[in-house]
Image (cartoon, rainbow, N blue to C red; front, side, top):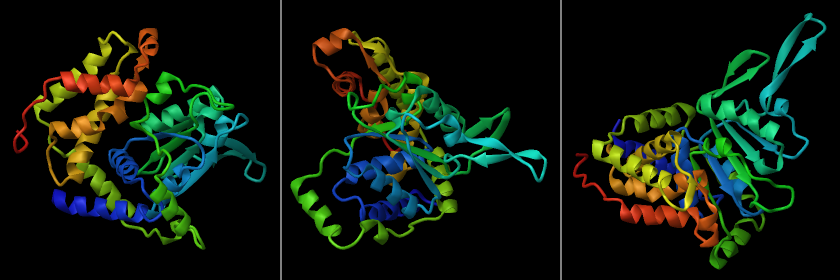
Length: 318
């Protein structure tokens, strides 16, 4: 099918989610892009700005089975992955699935739970598998984790390890709504729940088809070099202690392909890369003390790098 057909489907999904998530069009689009590229999303923000509503709206618009888990200090890894329990009648152990067995797993306030529980997410996010007592179980397709975290420094929170952060394709922030946006939210929730108006825009087969179409988007060698050059600049930057890993460059490549498809193209252009670069790279970077002393953020450094890197000229995919 043509790129324009898939673009039409993508626009339908966005339109449905916008019924429940008001005034956050950019966040909606970027979240969907990551899902279409089989990536996971981390949303960092204060409570009450619509993070959970966003995830629930996507589960309805995409027709996905979803589970939500509130991550607190007492949540165990087995609550996420599942566990074996002895069945007296059968005289054998049976596997009981954990909350992660679904299509869309909402991990709420992920930075409030223990490191041991967080580590239970590493395999399922990277390999879409869960291993319990030596037996590996395949997770359903499509599969996405949308995790939320409170700002670092909030009560009961701690930093996620780099290995965990690196498995999120993008990190976003909802932010406070505008005054007009908040008025619209109040009116929408006056006597009903906007989520009830969200209709299914595509089924699972259609979503898998779009994901497959993303993988077939063409990338010119100049774009490959552009992506790697940006990543390499973070590894040699005087204000960065830990730069972008190859997993980060893969994430940027994949989501750039998703942007191209959403725009109705079957090839990637430099603007696709620069548009999403900060969302993909910023949370993977560890700044050194000199950057903190100069009050430089990861986003600002990436913007500086993008300005300094030569932009390749791509015409008609070549």
